[in-house]
Amino acid sequence: MELNLKNNKPIIFSGVQPSGVLHLGNYLGALTQWVEMQNQSNCIFCVVDYHAITVKQEPKELSRRILDVVKAYLASGINPEKVVIFQQSDITAHTELAWILNCIARVADLNKMTQFKEKACLPDRQGGSKESVSVGLFDYPVLMAADILLYNTDSVPVGDDQVQHVELTRTLAQRFNREYGQVFKIPEVAVRKQGARIMGLDDPTKKMSKSASSPANYIALTDAPEIAAKKIMRAVTDSSSKIKYDLKKKPAISNLMTIYSLLSGVSVKKLEKDYQGKGYGDFKKDLAETVKSFLAEH
Image (tube, rainbow, N blue to C red; front, side, top):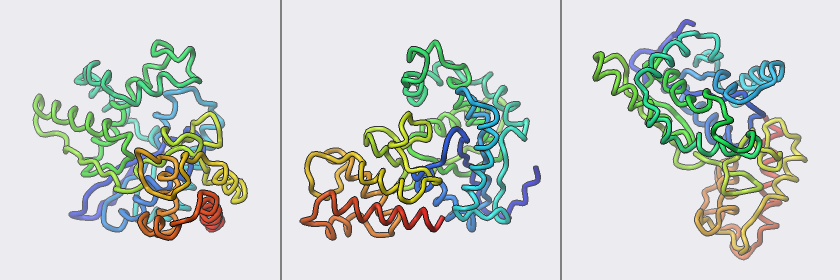
């Protein structure tokens, strides 16, 4: 793979798993940020298919979803003339470096990873037991570290659920450099202030996820506008009907307000003012129309 890097510009690396349909959370939390970065940085965007197979995948479906992810990149405004887009499994150096990093990583490092603990206990795992999940799922963060370090990455744009993995990447790079000299650049993590974690429509305590058991959890980028509108209207809300942004006391409406703000460009404060004295029904109807317009245009 040839990297035509722009001189003196930072290197950005990030990727999306082809493990399910891409959804609004992927778009608002990652893809829009990538589009903003592509003019100021050397951007390398990967389809991380090796990460996807840490859980069981149907080969034909996985092949189709790899192409779907690339299509979503392009549809979001990512310009292949400005960035590098590639499939992780095409570059053998990813797994080669992962093995080297495995030899300096410690089990204690990986035992700290909260995302593994969460995924290992999902209902679709056999018995919800850590003993039944793949070693690949446990070792996922080390492969992610290899992905990042391989390209002398300066900054890694991620959702807040991946920050711990980037911190492990930094730890492994520093450990390697102390032992063998200054080999790896120490990357920084980039988390956007708004939209770093879009929550599920059916449960505002859990992240919107393409692997969720119910499609009511997410709005897929491939959803028909009318279907997406129905999901918005059925989205969980809080007990009080006041339109107010408060992540602790009103997580459901706060999540919907974040989605509305990011799609419309209207600040959360302005939304609070605009919907003063109105209820959830009015808010949801307007958000549903905004989502419909977004999907129709993309």
